[in-house]
Image (cartoon, rainbow, N blue to C red):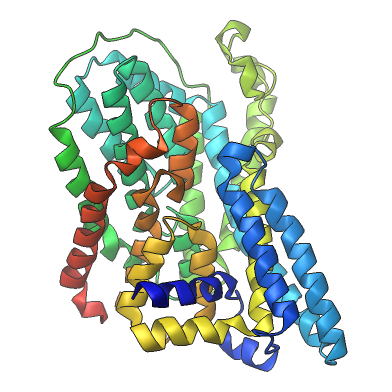
Length: 471
């Protein structure tokens, strides 16, 4: 099994993003050609640099964007020799369209999250939790459940950073509590994102491709909850049974905060309605929701005299604008552009490698030889090492013929598999930086067997409760 996984790894990473039937008519069989091997090497080098970001401090978008340009230049050269320049152009344009839809969708979601941050929604929640004087064990569960239920709406990275700030503020010098609290937050945030189309980029991709209907994702709620609860229940007994002193901190949300939260929920409803009832891409609904925020931002700007925000009550490092003045383009500018550009590089890289013919190789090994269940479980294990975005792109590109239950399984495993290692998800990597010296790679690795137990349990529960979807 292990040797077969190693055979499939390069092919899986190289799988394209466009549908299989389109690829069959517009691809080259260059899997053993020097140009194909050159493209694989370029992509693997770029991805090694991505994985080493914590040590090199080279932003992850830079190597993959450069690799995308080099790979497609090589493709254009080979395609011209085979009289397939037009096909290569069509393929890269298709990749750009797929990227544009997902990038704009994510940009709107990030803008709303940043707008709520600017209105101090998350700061208020953090201060409220700290002021209640919960014990370490109570706070362990509260931050875990909050991460689990906030991440389906907000992204798991923002959720994890918010909950980690609470753990650090209360935990202080208690390294054991901070370490276990951060591990619990990473597992909970990733698990919570797996049962919602908005919780993770991978679930969003599956929804936008039409593989799973919007409401069907919520069939993963119980398996995702099990994935979080199993390791949390075991770690609970090692949490110090102490009650730290409550810290008094008064934070007020800024004017319009609650209305922005409601507009975000309305935006989600708009995206779902556009997709389900009007059969339009969800991104059209999200961009319409951005219009809601822009109009409301205009209202806030015109009524800025009502703001009570004082200059001494502002985090000047947040760069969120002038006190009392709201500008909707400030949250847009503060979106995770490195993540969005990384996404571009990945889409173009794997799209190019797929054009060179690696799709059928990966599909045959994984879904024909192994079978969908073992293949989808392996996808989750692979996502602990490699970012789950290219892995899920690979699966969607292969477009294997499997029932809804198997699409739900791969959505679950790709979402929660990254919890096995601290470097397996954006939440884990971010928390290693935020809680530097307290939450580390090896500190997380010590609890990997427990997290793996939750991973196995969630798959078993999915097989049990969702058997009606076909497995």
